[in-house]
Structure formats: C-alpha cells, structure tokens
Length: 424
Image 1 (cartoon, rainbow, N blue to C red):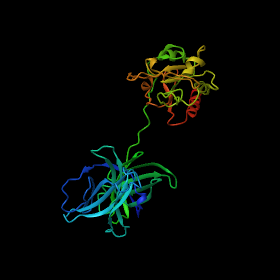
Image 2 (spheres, rainbow, N blue to C red; image 1 turned 135 degrees about the vertical axis):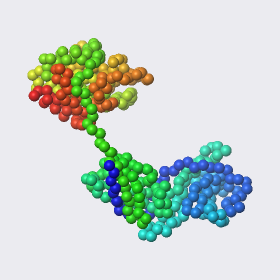
Image 3 (cartoon, rainbow, N blue to C red; image 1 turned 90 degrees about the vertical axis):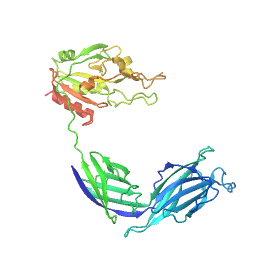
Image 4 (cartoon, rainbow, N blue to C red; image 1 turned 180 degrees about the horizontal axis):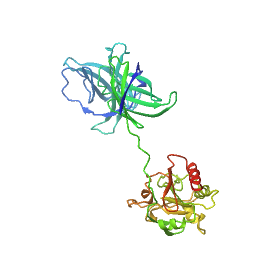
C-alpha cells in the first residue's frame, strides 16, 4: 500500500565550507602537443575533464610549479588553471589561475544560476584535491566533484511520527535531480530520529518497514512530494508444536541424551524447559574468537530462577554452540549439575570453548575448524533463528506450552513467565 505526503521546503544557500567534501577519483590525461584552437593554457602537461555545467564544459590543467620553492616544498606546489569551453564552439575563457598545494582541498566557483524566482542564487562549485603518486607516467591523483550550494529542508507530521527530509546538491535547472542527494528521517516529535536513510535523490530509501521515494519537487521548489510504500510486517515467528526427535551429547555428563531420555525423566516433574542460546559466555576481547550473543546470566542462577518455589522443579536443558572453559575444568569437574548442557551440533567437537578470563596464556581460541559443515543443529530443528536466544517450555509429553525470544522480552522476565506457567 502506498501513500503520498507533501512536505513544504525551505531553500537556503550553503557557504562553500559547508559543502560536502565526499569526492571520487577523476581521470587524468596528458595534454596534446597541439593546442586547442578555441583556447586553453600553454605549457601544461596534464589535464582532467571536470564536467559539463549548463552550456559549457570545464577542464582543469596542472603542472609542477617551480617558482614557490621558498614558500613550500617544490614537490608540493602545483600550478593549476581551470578553463571554460562553451558547447556552442565559441572561444574558451580562463576562470582560475593559481598554485595549489598537494593534499589540500580547493573549492572553486564555476557558474551562478539565478533563473528561478523566489530562490537564492545557486552557485556550482568544483571541489577537488591533488595528491602526488610518485609515478612519472601519472604524477598526480585528482579526486573531485561538482556540487551545488542549494540546501532544502522540510518536515511534516506523518502517522504518529514526524517525517523530515533534506535535499542537497541540486541544480534548479535540472528537474531530474540527477546530481542531488537526499536524506529522510522518522522521529517522535521533538526527539532524536528513530530511523533514517540517505542516498541519491533518484533512488528510494528504506527505513524500517517503509520505503520512501522522492517523487517530485514543485517548479518553485516550495514543496516536495514523497511516496511511501508500506511493507507488510512479518507475522509472529513460526514455532514448533512438539519437541522434535534428537540425540545430542551432554557436554558435562559426557553421555548421549535423546528426546526419549528427557521425556522419561520429566514424567515426575512439571515439564521441560529448553534454553537455546548461541553462547553461555561473552567473547574474550584479547584472544578474539567467534562473536555470538551471550546468555548474559550465570547458568546456575537462571536454573535457580526457573525452579524457585516449585515442589517438583522442571527438567532444565541448555543448548549452546559456545561454552566457557571454566564449566568443563572447574565448576563441574567433579560434580554433576542439576541441569543438562547439550551441544547444539550433532558433533560435540564443533562446540567452541572460550578461554578463562584470568588465563595468563592461551595459545589459540578453540573453535570449529574453518569450512566444517555445521548444518542440522538442534536449534534449527527447534526453528530458532541464528544468533537468537529462545526459551521453550514443554509438558511431560513433549507438547509445547510456551516459547519466547529475548528479542521480545528480557531473559529474566521470560524466566518468570515460564515459572508461573509450569507451577499453575
């Protein structure tokens, strides 16, 4: 479904120092030994085509400047001239002559446009920078762009938010807005933007579940029409209805656990709780390793919260792809925990092991070998998206009674909901 919004615009002229300095590399070529009959400088070795503005094309000429050795390093001084060549074939004229310093940005006005009533004068600038390459074949690198100093802004209430737009670098004589850039932002009134996007004015912007398109600007530039395409919001994520069949290794008990094993152990309990989390620990910054969302709470503390006040506590099962070394070699080295800790992978060797935080030396981060196939995880069988943490509650027959992702609510709040459901 699409709607259209009319936004009143206010147009101002930006000073040269406020123009965007994002430039792209331009082609440079040697100057022909035969001078242009319409004009142009003499004794210049290199040139670059600046581009066409209105009814003229502009060319930048450059060569080393040897007369400024007392002011700057002579390798940094470059003599430059910018010439204007009318497209009707008339004689060319010089617009700029001077000395440029390498790696210094220059903003040169090329042409003024004042043909549109009620608008401030528009000036077209050539923003450029010259850098040495160290090559005799192409001694200079030029980056630059043509830009216009008109700047339009506007905002309008839309739905329960405020839609703001900014349009820059537009030429009032170019109705197609080919060179213009625009930015759109959605915000609660008087607050920071909740979402925004920017890009060429001829391309749409995606913000959240909406696509914005700058369709038209009025002839006097007093308003802009923005088309808004509403995308269908995804429905609630699909969840399973029953606990699927599986066989996985318990990383702490070092034995295989199946669906039937867990259902048999849950017959005298209030049910089963699965905590599917990509990682049970945060990555160690110094030693690196795969970056996976952390559970954010000690596994034993979460277990106690789930079982608090229950006469017959549920069977709790953690499913993960990454565990801290302390679980294997310190906390549960000589005792059996009250919960299960299952490998998300069919092959438990693929589970990443994070080094201890106080380790004085860790030769490498223990993680799955590169290129190993890791599909067919238990989390995918439970329809859990990658890098998502979800808590499931099943009755003692394996029927799903509750599931919620931490994208929907905080983990401890979900644990409280699970405890209330299982103790009813």
